[in-house]
Length: 351
Ligand SMILES: NC(=O)C1=CN([C@@H]2O[C@H](COP(=O)(O)OP(=O)(O)OC[C@H]3O[C@@H](n4cnc5c(N)ncnc54)[C@H](OP(=O)(O)O)[C@@H]3O)[C@@H](O)[C@H]2O)C=CC1
Ligand SMILES: CC(=O)N[C@@H](CCC(=O)OP(=O)(O)O)C(=O)O
Image (cartoon, rainbow, N blue to C red; front, side, top):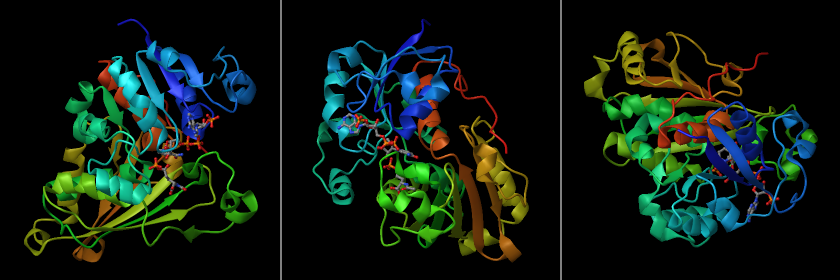
């Protein structure tokens, strides 16, 4: 296939610059338009010296004709933006990969409730495919509009899918404690993300309700074949990248005898045996965020402490990579019939 022409709307944010970094190493794609209203006219390499020598592009204001000249448009914008701009692109046959939450939740009233605004484009929601390749690979291949999963939802769903798909655990009382680096909040100036506010401290936030809850429950409910009830508490870590989720689910009485540690390990290994970007680590492992930094990998570990009836799953991803931009590229590779791993094979940055 000839080189894919890609555009990025929202190129000055963290997921936008992560798309640029990863696509610089992808021989099948040429980024031909990158937008920013605030930085229109500025060279990409001037704003991001890390990209000097890789891009000879300037930021431009979003323009539907320029975007429609591309094969695929990534939206790396706050929620509400893609809803307004995607319909014109879909009508012109362009493929769209939205990293925001605009098309993730199928129930419009639920979306409006959690996002606190009317949905700008409910008519396209039914055709949007939720871009979690480990669940929806076949639908992604034929999709015109991809709703990339959120960062926390990626880490939580990948950790719990094997347990819910097989009906081993109760579908209520599941707990997800997850902690994210500050890049998860984007590149906008916010007081609580100042170095002096966020360094050398640790705290939960949105414990009373975070907008990723309905997205996670939607995905887990599909896996379980019925409603799933989860308690989700996010935390903010004084680091830049990475999400670590600790997940707790209670074995059903009927499943407890058949779910020894070895059987759980085998279940996870079999579920993800063919998945290039999910690594089930050896029993007893404790995955670290640094082992996935900059990569599309999710590393998982499953255990049954003291042989009791609570299964604990540990899940580590990079919020900007498997949690956003690298997963978006994985989706693009699938949509365009490329090798799914293309541009995503570098190991993590360490230390
Ligand atoms: N950060 C993360 O770890 C993750 C983020 N996401 C989601 O990805 C999206 C982008 O996140 P992130 O990169 O962190 O965000 P940032 O806040 O860092 O960047 C937002 C980008 O969008 C552009 N933008 C803002 N408003 C508009 C608008 N009305 N029209 C066009 N462009 C606009 C901004 O440029 P300008 O204003 O100059 O046009 C900027 O380039 C969000 O929806 C976020 O929730 C998903 C998973 C993980
Ligand atoms: C640390 C931090 O603030 N994280 C963000 C993650 C949100 C995100 O990026 O996800 P969406 O794409 O669903 O908006 C938050 O909790 O709001």
